[in-house]
Length: 82
Image 1 (cartoon, rainbow, N blue to C red):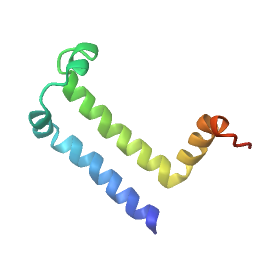
Image 2 (cartoon, helix red, strand yellow; image 1 turned 90 degrees about the horizontal axis):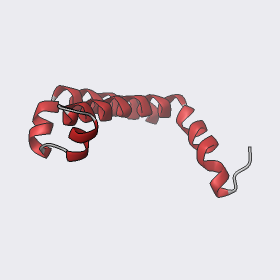
Image 3 (cartoon, rainbow, N blue to C red; image 1 turned 135 degrees about the horizontal axis):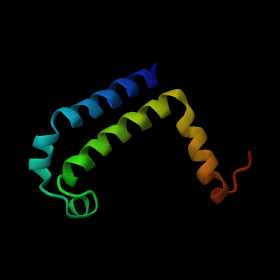
């Protein structure tokens, strides 16, 4: 049941970021590195990327694949064995 609430909160957060991205951009202003590396409108693109990553990582957490990914990538640095 806890993961269900995490899913609802994560999906709602991703939706709200996408829905209010213009107001969010007005709040934070232009992000220099995003404008430089993502081109014109890079701040808006970065906000969309953050929303998509929020959705993807929330879904991965709820399905249990985030734990597996983190274990496989970072486990060897902390002495974990399969």
